Length: 243
Image (cartoon, rainbow, N blue to C red; front, side):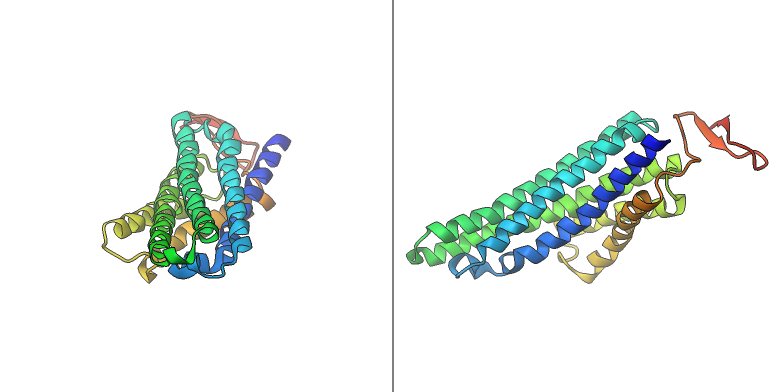
């Protein structure tokens, strides 16, 4: 039981760190995310490097969540547990490509001459477009399938956390993925209010999960194998019953 509490604490802290690093990276990057002329300007390269570092930490915490949870989740279904790990890796691959695109902007800004200003702006726009697409396909789509739908379903099924809150993942994950697909096919613009509304349940789910696991841990009454669920009998100690 103590080892489970330690596992829950580690995962909870990692989830909280994903929020800190991802939000911190956006603020650190600053104008490079929105100004196509950044590549020809004075630049604030130190901020870009800080943002890149924070996103590297985001990658580590994202994958860490899945790896640490895997031994717990595989009791509910090893295939789905492995799928969650794979989804996190795919999401982080997109994040890494986005980091490289912004670092490339910094390199071009530092090495190119002013005579190449027109071409630089075009390259800057292209690299920024890559960053935007990686955000959409990674945190904006794959995360909905992995941390939302798959993890939400596994935790709902197991009862390791509040099932009512786990529904935020089961429902919010597909909503997030659907909004990402809608942007991909041009149905809604990226960053629109509709996309923001679709993102909210997933945001609540991941925030809840980090806080719940950090301060409360796994629920004691949970599925312990694929076919057995402990239940209370007349207020006595849990007795195993077949599902």
